[in-house]
Every structure is written in C-alpha cells, then in structure tokens.
Length: 358
View 1 (cartoon, helix red, strand yellow):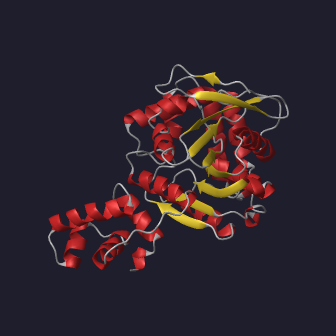
View 2 (tube, helix red, strand yellow):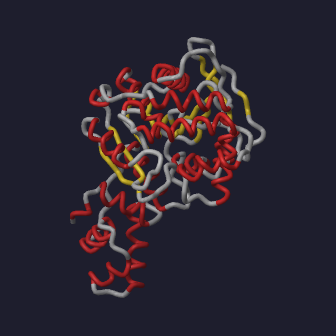
View 3 (spheres, helix red, strand yellow):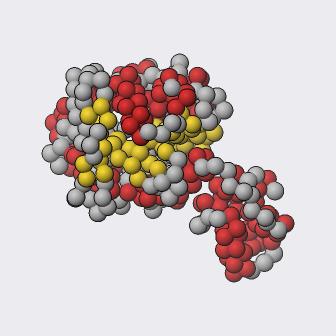
C-alpha cells in the first residue's frame, strides 16, 4: 500500500497501511533497525503521535537501537479506518496478521501490552511459524467478566463507561485524569498531558466504550498453555490497572515463560522511571542474538555479582573493604566490559551471564 509521510512530527514518520478483509485500512509505522518487534495495538494508540510523545518516543528510541519496532493503530483508532466488524479477539488477531504480513519479515517478535497480550498470544498459537518470541507487559489471561467480579467492581466499571460516554475527547479534566492517574500515577506534568492528549486523539467516545467492553470479554486461558515460542512476561509491581497477581498467573500459564517484576507503579514504564531501563534492557536482551560473554577478572566477577544482587555502592565498598571512590571507578570499568550504560542494564546483563550467583 502507498505510504503517507507525516510533516507534523519532529521526526519523519512514514505511515503505511495494511488492509483487513472488510477493506478497512490499518495504519502502521516502523522505527529503528534490527530484528522486527511488532507492538500489538493496545488501547489509545496513534502512530503519528508516538514520535512527539514523551511517553512513547523514549520507547521507540531506546528499543529502536537494536530492533525494528513496528506499531499500528487498531481499527477505529488513530489513523486506521473503521468497519462494522465486532471488536474482540478475532478482530484484533486479524489486524495483527495483516500488519505482520505487511512488514515482509518471515518471523517477528510480538510485544503485547495490557489488553494486547491476548491477541499476541492468540496469534502466536495460531501462527507459530511466524512468531520468534513473545513479550507480554502488564497483561492478563481473561477480562473482567471472566473473573467473577463483585457487584461493586461491576458498578465501578459501568460508572467508568458512563464517564467516558459523557466526556471523552472533550478535554474534560475529570475524564482524562481518571485514566491518567491510574495508568501513570508517577508521571511528570508533560507525560500526564501527553497521555491526556493521546486519549483525545486516539478515538471518539463511542469507540472508546466499545473497546472497553470488548476488553472485558477477552479470554486466552485455553490458548496460553499452547504457546510454543520463548516468552518473557513483565509486570509493574504496583500496577493499578492490572494487578501483579494477574501477571504472575499469565506467566505461570505459558510453558517456560520468564517473569520479571518491574519496580514501578506505572502501567506504562516511563523514561525517568528506573523500571524503564530494566524493561528495555530485558526486552532487548531477550530478543537479540546472544552476545559473547566478556572476559572478567575474579574481582570483576565478584563485583558484578554484588551489583546483580542489588547492593548499592556503600554496601559493595563495605563488602570488599575498599573506598566508595574505588567502587565507582571499578563499576565504570565493569560497565564498559559488560557493554552497558548504567546499573539497571548491568543488573540485567550480569544475571543473563549467571554472575548473580558468583
């Protein structure tokens, strides 16, 4: 399909279009170079807005260092067209299939965040030959209506839907802040404003309500045990949208899945959050071909183990019987050998190399 070029973003976003059976066009874009990682469309996306968002641009820039990040808008959202196809797992999987085909890559990795974890799992099970890896962030096995919700929980959900119907897309502070403070409670003012604006740009009130209702019906409990590809599940420990326990259940349901807890309350990892680098490094390390293990001295291996165990500089200095300045200098040398840029990356890399037990 022909591409459209954005002139409003600070960087040029080449917007392309894939097509589903109804004829609706699905807007998608790519960023970075390397193995293809498809970010499955989740609620409130706008592929053009990503490049000027203080929330999503850091994702693209960081992950795009070693990966080609493909993202798209689900039908009726962002720059994608609409049709009369009922929303749900089949519709979402069809969109994903169209975008994967459009990339031209024989195999891709999938990133399914929140409600997008379900179509990512479904596609991986239905098309195992096309999926190399599966990364799931803040995801869950089944939507609200499959969780035996209490009367109070259902009433809260219906009130949320009503709030969206009344104020979505109108720059209504009550509506915008209701979602923003739950999705990213530790956001800066710029990040909160960006998510508020993304809500307004992503879709209209009627579509937002349809999507919210469709998410309550998602259910991949029968599919998750059938996943065959390597899977990484990450979840924020203080997630207010999807509780941590649901992330653990998701990881337990997928054979051989790795589970990583992110030290944050934000449903979406933010650039200034220490969890952001842990998330990006975990994903990059999981997807990239294995790097050769660095040659470390016994002292460097001991230092790496202490870092991997979560000890700070003062604790390391005490353990090794050296000055704090000596630790700082030794860490700089260690980071260079590990090819990392700071402590969060060093923790991940050291654990990958099995140095946490050294």
